[in-house]
Length: 115
Image (cartoon, rainbow, N blue to C red; front, side, top):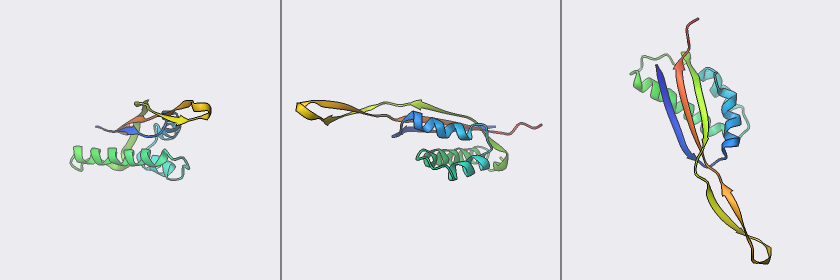
């Protein structure tokens, strides 16, 4: 059984988020949350919250029948969302563009394959 969770329009660059997502890809849920707890990147907090949301979706979908300890982060992907464009005044009446990038994160949890 699989459960999904999506976080859209996170106001953080996809490049920064994807480095954190690579740390937990393929890990068990408990191990992934433990890694994120001690990761000193700003993207670790929203990714941990998203994984907890996917666990809650799994328990709700199966009506409490799923074993949370057996769940594994099957896939986690980070896509680029829309870019907000802001302008900052510069010297001699010019203006330069500031790009505020956003991210979409998608997580799929599945039960670990039996060996």
